[in-house]
Amino acid sequence: MFEGLFRPMHLLLILFIVLLIFGPGKLPEIGEGLGKSIKAFKKAFTEKDEPKDEHKSIDQKDEKKGN
Image 1 (spheres, rainbow, N blue to C red):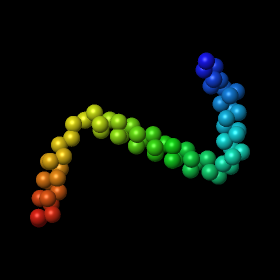
Image 2 (spheres, rainbow, N blue to C red):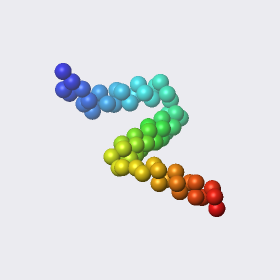
Image 3 (spheres, rainbow, N blue to C red):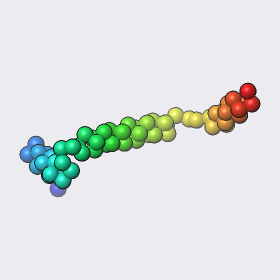
Image 4 (tube, helix red, strand yellow):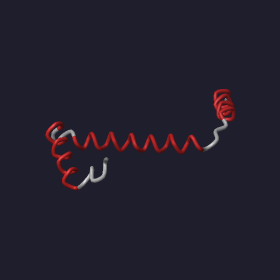
């Protein structure tokens, strides 16, 4: 059903339409926001796999407040 959906000509057409809608000034901002979103998603995904010791971090915060 979706074979050949993203051929180079299709991608150029999509890029042209996005350029018309947002203009050349907004594209860097959109790209930056998209990049930050992907980084945050990857970071959240990898942090999920790592076990966290929440009690330890809370205790450390309490110790810092006491000093």
